[in-house]
Image (cartoon, rainbow, N blue to C red; front, side, top):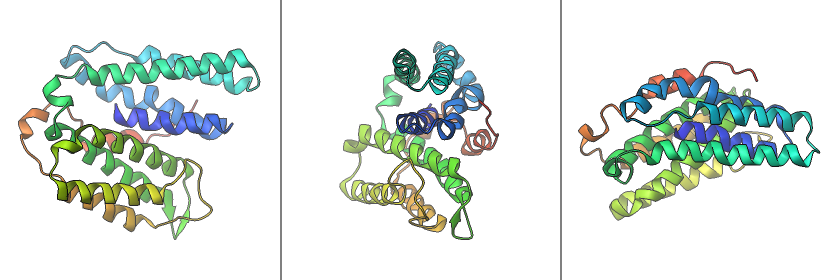
Length: 231
C-alpha cells in the first residue's frame, strides 16, 4: 500500500509538470504489479478490493495525456487520482487500530519501504551517473511516503531515536530533493544505503507477533518492482 502511494506520488507530480511519458510507468505500477501481492492481505483482513479505482485512474490519466489542454480531462484525472489515494488509504485504515497506530508495526513497515528505496536507488546509478530515471523517481516517492508514516508514530519513540531517524530522513530528502532527475547524483548509492541503515539501526523491534501476516517480505516487494510496466 505504501509503495503504491509512492508510485502515485511520483506519477502525479510528474503529471503536474506535464511529463506524461515519465509519469506513465509509475501510474501503471500499482494496478499492474503492486496490487496482486496484497490480495491475500486484503482477503485475510476482510478489506474490500480497490483494483477498479486504480484502473480508473489509469484510464483517466491516459485520457488526460491524450488531451493535456482539455479541462474536463484534467478534472477527471484529478478526481480519479483523489479516489485512488482514498481507496489505498481506506485499505490501510481498515487495519486493526492496534496495528496502524503502533510503532511496533509502523517502524518495521518503514524499514521495508526503505529497503525497496535502497534497491531502487542502487539501480538508478552506475559508474557515478544516472542510468535509470524511473528508479530515481521511485525512490523519491517511497522516501516521502515512509516519512509520512514515521510522523504518525514518532511520539512513541525515544528522543534519541527520533533524532537519529529524522536526521537520516532529512539527508535522504536532500539526496532526492525533487521528482525530476538532477543533472548528476547528489550522492552515490552507498551514501543512501548508509542512511537507510542508520534508520534501521534506530528502530527497535518489539512485539513481532503483531505484524505476522500483515507485512509482505522485502524480497517480494523488490521482486514486484523489477517487472517493466507498459501503459
